[in-house]
Image (cartoon, rainbow, N blue to C red; front, side, top):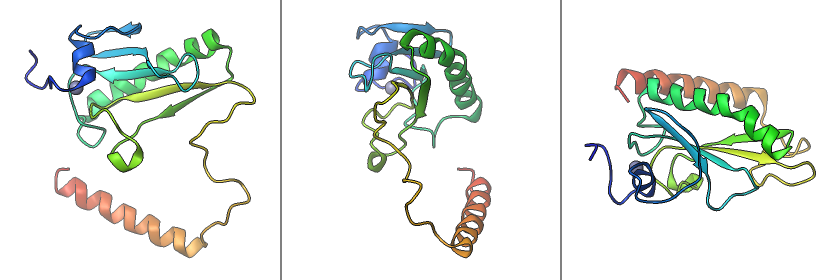
Length: 152
Ligand SMILES: [Zn+2]
């Protein structure tokens, strides 16, 4: 068993061959398979084989491989589903809807005329002032530097 493998993790059991899924891509580091509860047909999960809780914990190189794999399979999902849109989604924390604590990307084809339930605000929604945005940008920039200095 991989030292990082977590026997209580459903994705680790899938990667270990203990749970059946419909695999669409597999290499030495990444596996992609159909979500068993798709939002729309063709909904794919892209998962690094090593167990990391979420994007906060994944080494940058492996995160890049996961995103690169998503990019590579995206056109095939679009063609197979005849959807013009394929959205990418990654929950990173319970409050954001993460329910399997093994980092993964969702690739979700969205049929024309169907809703995507994670819509960003309507174009007519109120917008913060420029100064509010600037204050938040400075705050985020400071925190990025603080977290990098702390080795997060
Ligand atoms: Zn896992």
